[in-house]
Image (cartoon, rainbow, N blue to C red; front, side):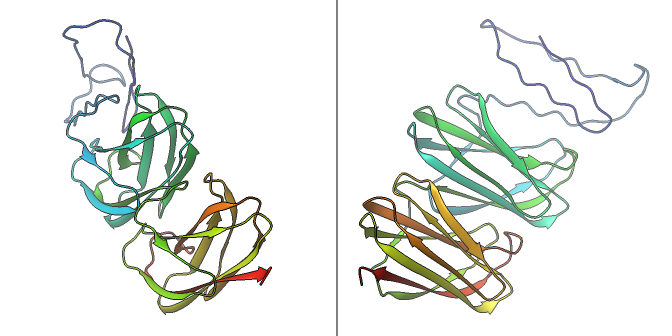
Length: 262
């Protein structure tokens, strides 16, 4: 059906044609006579085994303890939902990689990075989606990571804001983002400002339309600001996080103002 080989990590993904018992053979792919030890990982991408449920707006911690290992998470979503997923390392030598699969087990998107890997994508299918997190460097590194997921249209675990509000918040974990929502009318001009009050993170603010499309984003070492004219009436989302490397933490103040009409 399929095969793969590599000096450090080999991977094969296949759709199975029939029901029954399948066979895997593992050997030396260099010259056929080399010897050594290996780890082998197997997962079903539709309806994965040993997976953990994930809620929108939640940060979870995980561990890759063995080479070739991947951690599986699932969440339910609808077609046309806009999804943001981010993962950051917290210990070890892992370069976190995150992969998103649709309910049929087809790969939607993936990302990997030494500090923070992020996916922002619109879904085309309703049902239970799968996230796999592993090492994106060479598939053999281990370590701990944090994983965050959010639905950008109708976000979970969001705090409502009103115009003129000044609120304080904190990014307490790597990969974490805080979510705020506010209602506005098309044509409103708004200003969103975020200031760091403690810690080593660079405050970042992102503004999303009611359908989850990104309007704009800004980050800076101490203070970041957006001034935008809103395109439509509805509920908008603001996401606050670390704009330095996605894994730094600290406290901030956030203010929302409507400039026109006042």
